Length: 454
Image (cartoon, rainbow, N blue to C red; front, side, top):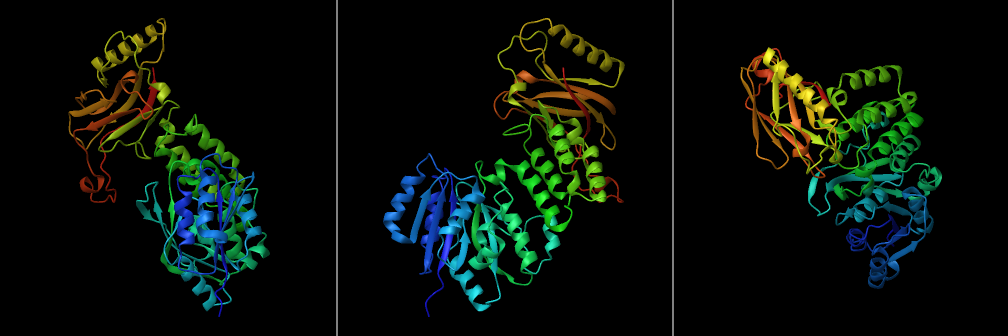
């Protein structure tokens, strides 16, 4: 009996760093009736020379074309139109198949002719092939409603019967990121009970700065919400809240929006019609009570907890433009602390007055980041804070009593593309230890109530 022909389609655009490894992971599989079809969108790196060299090595098992496309979904559909196999796999040019992946998928589909799709386990890897973690896959018997909680199918592990793809009309080319998610939903709704899960690692999905998952997080969130609302009626706010968590991991560094709070609020308004009334209320509550969004400035972000507490280390990330090196300074360049006492208020007024006077001087008018905080029980007094601005030696500020205090941190001390100020308290507490009624096991120190650049 002749083996069932398999076609693996691969969209590509400027993936010269990874495409040879991806192609070899297909063409070196232990399955004889196999072809790889690459649809390149017009790469300007070494992708074409790599594909030409691989074509000489593997002959007609590798076919490729280079032509402009409207995006990855269009590229996949173009490759599908060229595919000859009755079973189709889809591997991105920066991902990898594990050995035996194709044979395992074909065996499962042949064992049950009613199946239209199989998918397996997957690993996330980085640009150096190091394993990061396991993809959160769920069984094929998982109800379709569980897609509301996240996508549990890793795209490169999927193999489908080509006729099923034909019935569905291929990928939705109006989507720039969630076209695979949309396809899984359509398959689960159109072919219930005809999908199988392979309990083995079938593929490795690569996460790196240039991949869609990292570059287009806002678009992924928006399109996923719209796709869920289209197929299931409404979407879970989880998708937008996950976007907030992702931004809070790095804002304002990297390709961050200019204003995080404004960005999130505009996205929530844009997607409001996709959520139920309860979902909108949950989203409104979560966003309005999130201290990270309330504190976020276009120039600076405090990596506090969602309820505003600093942990064992508080990192203040600065946008590069906020840190201005090489200026002449009048007065101190060290961090200052102003406590909630007559002397503290006097120091606060002194720093604010000094800041206003600087407006009459040449150069940047902003000099300090003021952080309004609370030193609260159950921590004892005094609270000592070790503050490191960039590469400078650490300074120590002491808060002598409980109550409100302000920190004044010099912006010029932290420079560079990943500018950061680090604040380390000398003591922390765990709510679950000091209060037997609490189930909160976080290490906390002081609360942050406000941030201002003066």
